[in-house]
Image 1 (cartoon, rainbow, N blue to C red):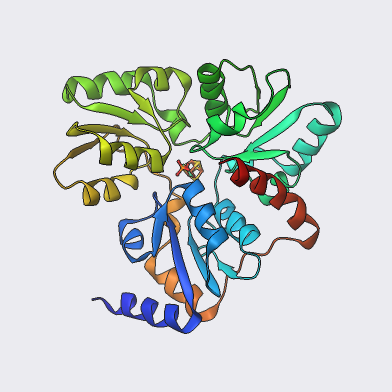
Image 2: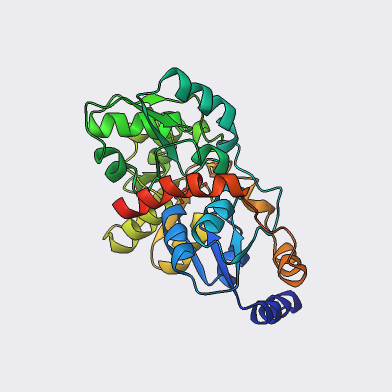
Length: 301
Ligand code: 13P
Ligand code: SF4
């Protein structure tokens, strides 16, 4: 075993720490994590964790969600520069202004949003529970869904709703086109196409299924099919291949890489555990309001 993994194990024990990792982080990090999962699974885990320290291997909004759900733990973000460009497409000031101008709207924020934005909204959702959360809101209410216009549009189509959509998107998933799917189907006829609901609606319509990363893993595990074209960030291929050694996976495009997720390295996990640097802090005046929409989401999940 490499020295760095030994060091991580040593410091993990010293700190009574747990390592959580999103399905998009580097393979070697998924392998040393105590738990790897999608945004919903990681939130549920963070809420029930018994540890003094949580190392959150994911982007900033995930660490913030972990801290809100586990306020007594020290939550460490191994690389504080790992942000989510989509989360940054909705600022708290813009959301406050929207609220003032539309006081009767229900504001639903995708969990890919900053803590100060969550403090301004009514409900949160992840890609794993968006349907359930949106369906829990009476049909006669006007909803503003933020910041992902693609996930919102996909839910509108699926649930026959007409939510208003914030003009944000994930730059990685937004580059996927129906043509890419048609090309991949030609190369791998017979393979099922699985995409993420952060892709554009025309892409979701061209694919066979649109699922959260946890949903993709579950679907493949239970499927009798043997070949899959995967239309989401490439990090998920590691778990898919490890958990299903007899099935074949083809990335839809080699360019589906989230640079922010890749910023987390074994070195910065070791350093953050050893030095307790990069602790997630949420301003006291935001904590209660930011936690409310997350708690409501978890109650409905
Ligand atoms: P899920 O893992 O919840 O599907 O989210 C995907 C994502 O883009 C996280 O940043
Ligand atoms: Fe944000 Fe997209 Fe990266 Fe997820 S994959 S963290 S939504 S930029």
